[in-house]
Image (cartoon, rainbow, N blue to C red):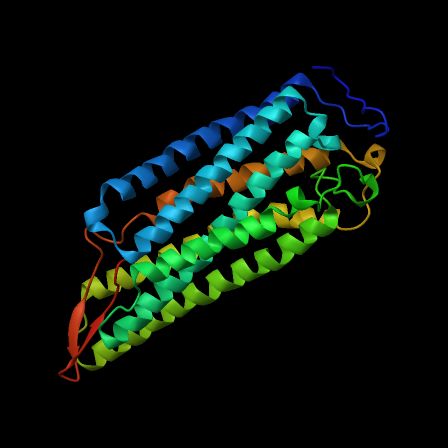
Length: 322
């Protein structure tokens, strides 16, 4: 590994200096996090498959999310290996890196679509408890998971369909060559904004519904300490989910916004820019690691289900299938 890398013919020179220890200090932690994430998500998938008799509709979305995170960790592991072996290729781009970025993009898009589907499913389930029944079926969650993967494959696979900058340096992203910056803007900004807004609205709505239910129960003189505990857990989990998503994807989102203006002159870029790029990738990997922990952790021993008579004929459930 040379202390300073020059581009191949046609690329020009870069002032970026990669030291041996800098490359390892960025690459090794990402490899380790990816491996742990792969183990965790494999465990989730195997657990869901082995417990078919206990399957609930939400399990389909959890399994789809775990599969997305597994693919994200695997592709990120591949990209980290490419970075350790040839760090200059992650600056100038290559066909191999294009395949890695495309697979990673599909997995990330599938992850965010599955996150939104889970948020909507949780909202519909809790809202439906006002009528003491749950209308979410297996085929509905299966359709949502399938739709998430189809959309992710459509948008994430565009670079392999021709929307790439392998031969067009003037339109290429400075951080993620050979991807085109207009493609990154097209995919990143709408999806990030939609994901953050969707998760915020759905989980805030869940908290509001639970507080409304608690007020109705309190008016009937049936205040239960277990209900308060359940409500607090749902609120805490909802806040963690939203903050975790924002923190994990904000660095990548900020990088794309920074990259949107013209930064095609590699000689003008400092190495700190690429260090930030690698740290943003590590944050996305951490999200793939934390997702199976947060989303598969049940609120209570068997999913807290509180039933209280209201108006003599309506039963309100605090949480269903959580």
